[in-house]
View 1 (cartoon, rainbow, N blue to C red):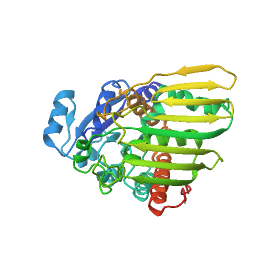
View 2 (spheres, rainbow, N blue to C red):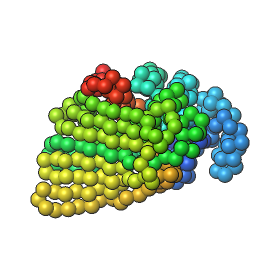
View 3 (cartoon, helix red, strand yellow):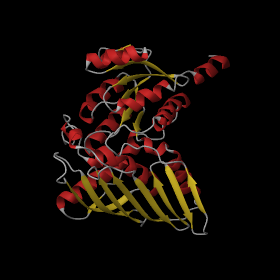
View 4 (cartoon, one colour):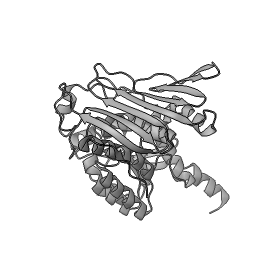
Length: 353
């Protein structure tokens, strides 16, 4: 291949199919329409033929009639998987066996063990697995990450997460929501997972947790709509988590860090920094986050940037920013919180092998 051909290949868009067209696909589809220079959508698939035809007609993308058709398509480099958690293992296995790279909605699977299985499937097949935990791509979160990495904040001493969200009972009346066999749990694995993942990317792993979870009188569901936990990080920092979908009308989630040189509060996408020198900075802005009655009330910008990173990682032959193995960290934390609440005692977070 001559130098011109190499350069052309480096600029070629990644060809992605979309699997799953439920509620969670809304920001993905909007983001993909904005990424025509870096991503080419080959087509879409969902088991619902009416929905499949509707999206194909709206977008002009091909309607695949099966996952197998995507696997056999030589023009497909990878797939964006947006199915419910209980439908992923088989789909991932088929895609991985066909050499297709995978960008998948959170959570990786319903339980830590199942999530580990999916990650191992992709690693054995030599395909890339990226996970959609888009809160890391917000402007305020990006700025906070750079500050932590720079060392300007000094050591982190305290971390606090609050997710005071709201879901009406009609949300849980939808088949499968808030169930362990389909979703894998409630507010922790479905909603709070985003902020918990962001926290861990900044603080490093948690060592032990002491937790309480339960279902409030406001909701009828199998899993929890409230979780509260005290955290001890491996670094020696302390922390707390409060997450619920029973806080009407719902407000923006927050992540607060108290460090050696500053106190920081990330509210949705806005970062407020109080330096101990007296200086105050604000970066980013508060946007919709899906914390109220409409779970999809947020922009597609973060999804767009995450998908673009995944496509760029394919072209540059590097790992995406959020790999399947990296996403296991938040699964380990959620698993420990659930065990602590169930057993009524302090539990240790599993250490990555």
